[in-house]
Image 1 (cartoon, one colour):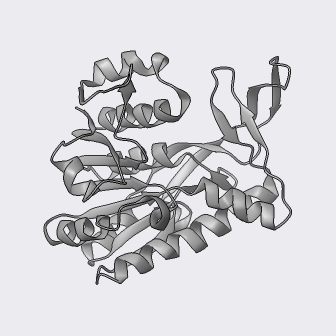
Image 2 (tube, rainbow, N blue to C red):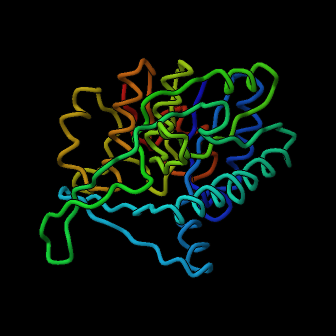
Length: 265
């Protein structure tokens, strides 16, 4: 079983040969896809006249502030436009797939963040309302397994159900890690726009779980989230986590062969 996390702009950023990889993979393995798509959400919200606010945490992480209206736009773009674009692309290769969210079948539950500690424009710490952002609390793999056992690839949008059944924006990388753990995946692959983790301009090709955890404070915000998701997946029993570029020829094949990527075991 392989879980693959891809960005939302699958047509823009990814090498078209990734579809060849999917075609080959489904012949011999079960496959689950989790996608992102923050850029598309921002573009659509702006077109609708809903300005997007981004906040910065004290440790420098930048994220979208999700109020109620933004959570509805986020749900619409993720589970509508992006999800269906990916399923249509797969089906153009004869790969049957179904776009679902964490809401469907109560698949992903999350704890809503009640308060957020952020830095204001002057760099001072302040506490704000948490909005509609959540941290994954549990994944029920029943729907995923039902689809897989009937020959469909699940394409999962990172939207979770809160304790009061509200829709919560969750981090796509960490959603993929939690899904991989829940389905007992052998491998989770994070397809991104760079080869993997770079330290002092050098690609880190292999890391142990312990070394990856120790490196976390020294990694920049974008990649830190992916490495953190890798460590979470491994701690849930996934055997191998890979961060790889989606722009090279046959990106998934190359990642599974551990070529030009970061492998954490």
